[in-house]
Image 1 (tube, one colour):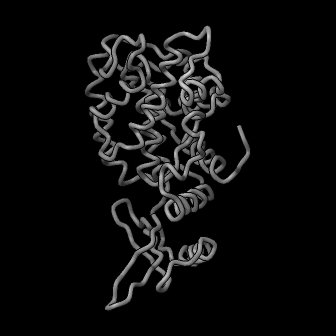
Image 2 (cartoon, rainbow, N blue to C red):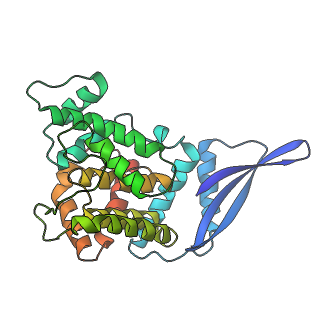
Image 3 (cartoon, one colour):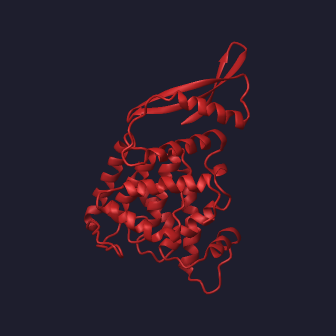
Length: 302
């Protein structure tokens, strides 16, 4: 994490550019460069940041991510922290529309991107569209606002409230609570746990998360949490949308911008979930890393 530190010495105030480097899963070391009595312009700050990176102590090893991607991810995180009022000012104005459209479309919602924009921006329901499709778009925006503003820990209550935000006012049979019947995941060989085992599995997820957040790179942590949540499949509906929101909550909490998983990548996304079911989260972690870098450093539209 990179930030500007202010120190007062007598009558004068001085500024330093400071970066925290994780040197082990539990230890962080800071490096700093003196800026003077005023904060330099952005371009100069970028040059100083390059010098600050050279002072970096050796960091802890990353288990799943390609080393080149890690460097680019840290550059992205540093620029987000220094230059943006995160998260709102770091995001394109249409982020919520595109995120909601793509996350819902992956689950079969028939609204187009334009129709989703009309629902969210102008409160216009397209003719011939089912009620649930429209409500799911509205819920997508509400769920995003809930995640963005949530500052506490990963808990069962947070997870249940998030699913409620995703499914409220729809025909989903159980909103805000765990499923009471066995389910199958369409197109997958994975069998989720029995309904009576779901509360314990979610508790294990939150407990293990508290440990792994001190051990894993945030992108690796997000991939691991997403895949384990999908394996548990704790709800009757809304599991995929809730998983992608939890993934983004982890990124935001660690000063990364959020990611959109595009519906055009649906088959690749599902394939990587299957790989996670087999115990290998590396492909999904690297997918998240590549998408983050492309979505925030490459202006190519999808």
